[in-house]
Amino acid sequence: MSLFTRSRQLSDTTEGRAEPDDDTGTSEPEGGTGTSDPQDDTDTADPQAGAATDSPESAAPAQRTPSGPPTAKPGWFGWRRRYPRTARGVSVGTTVLAGALVLFALLVPNRIERIEFASFVRIPAEGVLLAGLLLALPSKPRRVTAVVTGVFLGLVTVLKFVDMGFYQILARPFDLVLDWILIENGTDFLRETFGRTGQVLAVTGVIVLFVALLVLTTLAVVRLTNLMVRHRPVAGRTVLILGTAWITCMTLGVQIGTVPVATKGNAEFLGNRVEQVRAGLADARVFEKQASVDAFAKTPPDQLLTGLRGKDVLFTFIESYGRVAIDDPAMARQTDAVLKEGTGRLKAAGFESRSGWLQSPVTGAGSWLAHSTFLSGLWIKNQQRYRSLTTSDRMTLTNYFGKTGAWRTVGVVPGVRRAWPEGKYFGLDHIYDSEHLGYQGPYFSWTPVPDQFSMEAFERLEHGKKDREPIMAEIILASSHNPWSPIAHMIDWEDLGDGSVFHRIKKEGTDPTEVWKDPEKVRAEYRKAIEYSIRSLTEWVERYGDDDTVLVFLGDHQPVPTVTAGDTGKDVPVTIVAHDKKVLDRVADWGWTDGLKPAGDAPRWGMDTFRDRFMTAYGPRG
Image (tube, rainbow, N blue to C red):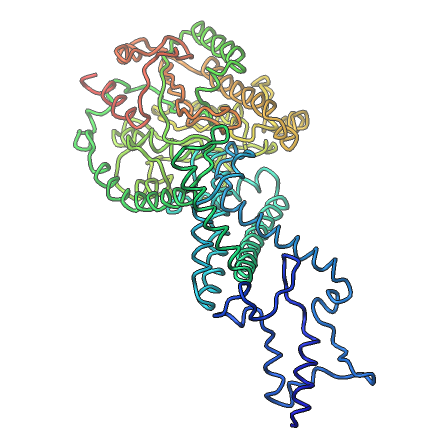
């Protein structure tokens, strides 16, 4: 190859190369002072330029027309050459969007109620330090760091979004060790509430958004890194100014409203997550020690629950029946009327009642954790503890009733739609799930069987049988389960039949997609659902209860924050109803309030303490 040919090829290649992606609107020469990284010539140099002289093949793509110039058009299929101003505007706009995305990822809080304008005009310490690090690194390490940082920033942002959902439902952040099973439960809830199509669309949408966020944050960090390198002096001065401003604002405590201008929120967020993981891993050992202590483990069967022998004892959970239903001014008047009415009707039927408060380990959801806490006498606050409990030999209230041999133990669990292996752990002789109650009506959103029908089925299948032995039943009423739309209403007990009547009632109900557009509508439907559950239970006692009926009913947890309106309390009401005065005399020293409504200052116990208090009160020394 002649010198002339080599010079022409270099010139042609240079002319045909796409112009630099300069987001500032100015063109800088390669290797120019103050604008490019001397250690990183490959960041901006066109590899075609050097390769053109190394082999004949390298010149092949540049086919010439008869007039001479190459036919290949540079950059975006030649679009940048034809429309340079528009191309530059798109390039600048893309860079601005990249910066906005990175800033959003660094500053977005992990709770919806904390999102405000001031949240996004702060100076993130992590962003300043990262920019300084990327400027200091050599070429290859910088590229790797930019990509890894982009992926990591995307994952942190995803975790923040997941936290938002968990705070909205459970009033707590996502647990990286223990909460993965709840994702499956969440998809099941979507299917049962919005159908299979709604579930598939929601899950697909989440996956697409997850992948898109990771890709976009990675591309954004890489793009901003390249921009800083091309304008190193300006970028260096900017980092120095921001670092100084961060230190000044942190020292002086500068705020916009109540939001500090200088923040290290991501470092604190990740630090809390590391501590959460550490605590989660250590919790198993702590729980094992707690579970090994049982005050009644060595008590002979004939000395257990002697104060209730011959009685039918029903432990009934009302889904999401929390303190907010009684205390919240928007619900108190209607709920109070229902509780007073129930108290009066039960009293007329010969029943007395006492009520207090229990503190649940969960709020918003996680009913099975509350149920197992109440029955086991252990604080079951996460899925790890639940699994450890249900694979242990720890005795629950239901186990102890069965151990005496004096009761037939049954479970009425209409919310169970599939195999429930944990049911064997609770020592129930027979379990009636949603498929075995004889119900031929429709689902009410999440709820497979309306509460009134569940109670009537219990009467038909167990309680109403003649010449039977005493029954201990665990009953879970699910009509007050989120999303509370549509809900059933009370009808004449004689009209229940096989439940087909509820098809008409469901059509008359509300649409959950419309209800959940308005928090006040959600709260109103929640209140109505609680009223329905209470009426189903109290009317059953009035109708079918007798001298030997003992009912313990309680809420399992508070409803979601949409209903509690920011209240983070975990209190739930608990009530004992009995016809035999001696039953209530045994708990006279508990200080509980007469009637179905606990007073505001009634005793408040941890839900895990109930088992031992109850067994002591109704034991030989009670």
